[in-house]
Length: 621
Ligand SMILES: Nc1ncnc2c1ncn2[C@@H]1O[C@H](COP(=O)(O)OP(=O)(O)OP(=O)(O)O)[C@@H](O)[C@H]1O
Image (cartoon, rainbow, N blue to C red; front, top):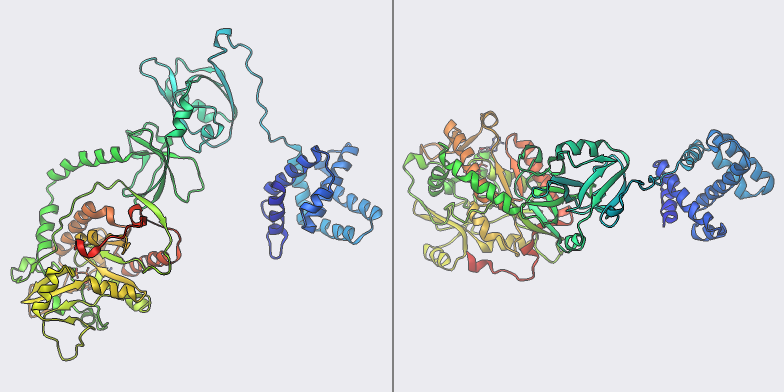
C-alpha cells in the first residue's frame, strides 16, 4: 500500500502542473516499499505490473541501480548522489540504449530528480526504527511477575498521560490516559499503573510536579518501570463513548485552577463542535475538537461539573446591583406604539413589500407611559437551561426538504430589521420574509397579501384561538401577528425564511420540521455602540409627532443588559452570534455564515432533529 501511495504522490509531484513537494516523505515511502520487496527477493517485474506510472518505474530502476552500484562502490552514496546519477545514466545508456534509457537520462538532468536522489541517499543512510535499550539487568527476582519495563519512543509530542499521587498508598500512579495520545496508541500504559522509574530515575520520593518536567524533557527512548494494574484495560475500552456536542460556553484550561492537569486540557470556544471520546470520569471528560488535525484528546469539564459551576455562580449574580432580570421583564412586556408605521422602507427610503417588523414587537417607548398596547406572547419566560454541551449530529439537507429557517434574535434596536432588510436586498431570490396579519384598515397604496394580510378582528381572534400565530400583539386597537402559515409559505418557495422573533418564540420553532438556525445579534461594548450609532435613528414613541429619534445613553444600557439576559437565558439555542458594531462587518459575517448553511456539509444540528419523528409545531404554539 505504501507503493501505491507513493505512486499517487509521484503523480502529484511530477504530474502536469504538479509541484515538487514532500520529498522527504516521498522518499521514505519509496524506500520502505522498495525495501520490503527487495528483502523478499522478488523480481522487479512485480513492481512493473503493480505500478503503471512510467516515471515511477524509472525511478525504481534508478534506485535499484544505485543500490547495486553503491554496494560495489566503497564511496558512501550520499556524498556522490549527483555524479552517481550521471554515471548510472551513462552506464544504462551503454547497456540498454533504449527509448526508456534516453528518457531516464533526461529525467536525471532534471534538478528536482537530482535533489530527490540526494534526499533518498540521506534518508537511506538513516535508521528510523527506534533502537530500544536492552532490558535493565538489575531487575530483582521477586519483581519479575509484577514489574513491567516499557520503552517508548517519544518525539516532541507529549506522552498523553497524567499522573497523581495515590492518597492511600503514596505511590505515583497514572491518573489518566488521553485518547489518541502516544501512551494510548502504544497500548502499554494504563490508568492505575504505578510508576516506579522513568529513565532510571526513582519516582518514589518525587512529587507529580517534579516528575512532569522530567517527562517533558525526555526525548527519544523513554523507559518506564511500572507496576501494572491487572484487568483495567478491558474496562476502559468498554466505557469509550463517541458523542458529538456543540459547546455552549468558552473554556480555557489555563484559567481553570480545578483542572487536574492544565497541559492535558482542551480549550474551546462557544459553538465549537467537540467529539467526546471518554466520559468515564464524572468530572472530567476527554474530547477532541472536530476538524482538528490533532487526534489526541484533551480534558474538558463534564456536563455535571459545568452545571455545578454555573449553579455556584448564580447566587453571585443576584447580589450584583444590576437591573438585568426585572428590567428586562419590564421591557419585554411593553409594546411599541408605532408598530403599524414601522415600515423600514419608510424609514430608510427603500420600500420592500412584506418587510415589516415581524411582530417581534418593539419594546421602546415603555418609559413614556403612553403605551396603549399589551403583549400577549412576549414574556421572557421559558426554562433556563444551563449552557453546557448540546448533543449534535451531522446533517445534510435532502433537496426535497425545505431550507432551514433563520431566526434573528436580539435586544430591541440592535439592528435585526436592518440585517433582515439588507439580506433580502442582497439576494431576493434566496431569502424571503413573512407577510404579517393585521386588523387595521388597508391604506390606499397597500395590497392585501403584500404589506399585510388584512383580516377582520373576528377572524384574527379565531386565528388566535386556533394557535395560528407565532407571535401577535395589539396596538392602538388593532391586532398584528405573524402566522405559522406565512413561514410555511416562504419555505415552500424554496427560500430561506428570515424571521426576527422574541427569544421565547425560538423554543416553539426549535423543531425537526424547521431546524432553525438561531442567530443572536448582540450589541458591541458600549463605547463602540455609542460610536457606531452616533448618526443612527430609531423609532420613538416618546413624542408622537416624530417617528424617529436618536439613541440615548439609556437605550444603549438597556440594549446591553437585555442582550446579557437573553444570552444567559436562551444562549443554548443560539447557533451563531454576530456582534453588531460596525454594520458592514457584522452584515458580511452574517451573510458569510448563512452561506455556509448552504455550502457546508455536514452541518451540526441538535441530535433530536435527526430522529424521524416529525413534531407537530401547530400543537405547541
Ligand atoms: N451597526 C449599526 N451601526 C449603525 N446603525 C445601526 C447599526 N445597526 C442598526 N443600526 C440602526 O439602528 C436603528 C435600529 O435598528 P433596527 O430597527 O434594525 O433594530 P431592531 O433590532 O429591528 O429594533 P426593534 O426591535 O425595535 O425593531 C436603525 O436606524 C438602524 O439603521
